[in-house]
Length: 462
Image (tube, rainbow, N blue to C red; front, side):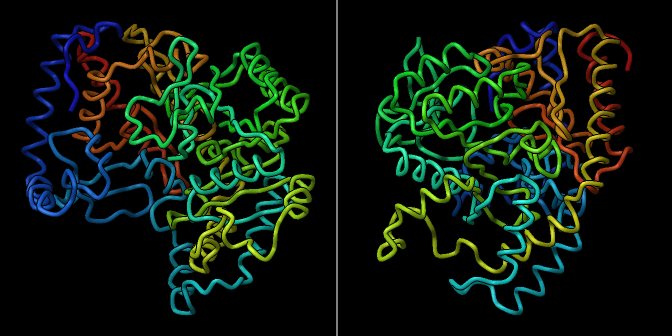
């Protein structure tokens, strides 16, 4: 876990106090999770770092918490500690854990067959629903949003004849090689932590700051950008909202440059049934989405406009369509599609989103009230049914500004403080997500814990 040297100094709190509170919370964590400690010790005999994926070590505490079960908006660990889950699998469980319609559809389909490489009726039903929600004409399936993004990029390169893509600094599009990048003194470089990048990213990618229209225009003018791959709002570096008019300029400039626009809605589905695209009237050429739409069952989906679909069909070499780098044996499998059909039709409905967004507004108000009461130089930002607080007095407008506002030691303390009080937040930043199963009391439990830690950090009484 990260060092606490100077933690909190730039966020209006005493670094020494942050260090003392962190030690106290670590001791409490270790006392209350003996079974997780033992399982982690045993897992180190077969699992790298003692976890299924190495990044799971980034959860707060001296070792990861092992889960016993999860239902709705709650999780119980192997030490019988219950949690209000505001992480929700970092969007994978936005529908809540094992919602009844999804679980029923998965169970019934598993008995009828899981995968066959042949289409099932659920495929066109999901396609029709995606077209209704997002407006694009043609749809295809993958097993993750990462794959959907990879395929959308390949399609864009194929039909434009251009080699490079453009992304925004601080973006997140899964593990797509071309997007694990950053800016260093106007140079495109691999993002810190990128594992074995296959090529120099400056050969594949152009990067500009979010909301920087002048830089976007400059890079598109080079004439070699096949597509812009964009989250409508940054979500993985902290929530960074678009300036008024930014998306209008993004669409205008891409069209003028002959560059395709791909909108990645995997996280921004939080804005409503049709994500940010429907809520704000965006007009992408391609759209990608993944983990939330099948209730936690692996899936990815990508949509193509009428014009893009026609160009794809014109250029497809049908005799070798199975070896073009777009596809996958398990893509479009019956189990994923049954889960998606049920989740979209019965769980992530328009009425559910109205309630989820109202809960996020309640969360935002509670955090803002505690920040104001304790006069902390922090702020809270909401995007649909997602909200996040950051250790900065003003909301960032770019990935660089969001990164500069990070305080890893203070972040670790707050995550651990919340976990010890039965609240799970997304582990990489102070983000909360609402599900159809989340309740007002769940939100209020977080507000109470946040008010408590804010009081401790400012030397006041909780």
